Image (cartoon, rainbow, N blue to C red; front, top):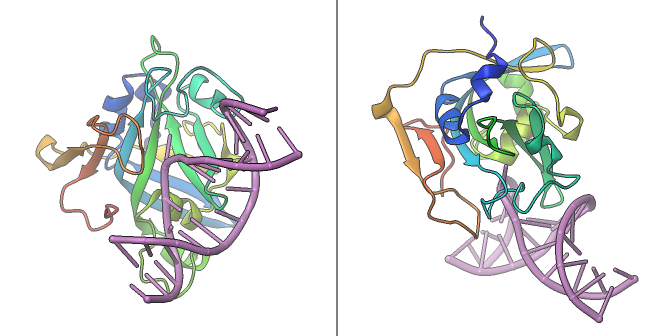
Length: 194
DNA sequence: CACCCGATTATCT
DNA sequence: GATAATCGGGTGT
């Protein structure tokens, strides 16, 4: 089990978004170990990306995106959901982060099901707000260092072959709609729809 | 202080 | 396909 090093996150945000595919998120909560494989990501760049929270400069909420790479950036949205990002950028860039849009549950699945609404037919972890519910990720984990063993970190896994990585425009945004900054694993059942 | 709206999701038609 | 739920940040008065 090899934890991703900080240097992994200190590269161009879109490259990190791509290479995070297949890596495994480990979450320790409530005496349970949860593991899930990243199958869909999106890159959000710095002050010039109109869809990024970092757009226009540093403020209280987006400060983590300007902070140390390899930290989590967790934000609250729509009054009820959290979204998980890993701060990632070439250190020449002022800000950047990778949104985790979907994961494939590997371990602790029953616990994840408990955290999610019962009787849902809409999937356990195939959406950014859903996976944070399943993995019990809240604002308490904002700025958490995910390059060290602890309650949340990421471990290495074999690289996904280029031919199995699909690239598209980002989802759920209204600006810079055409940028090819969404990455997902081809034919994976856990990739979010839309 | 009022208003708008969002890196979403479940539910209803 | 459309919309309600629900609230904090950002903007303007």
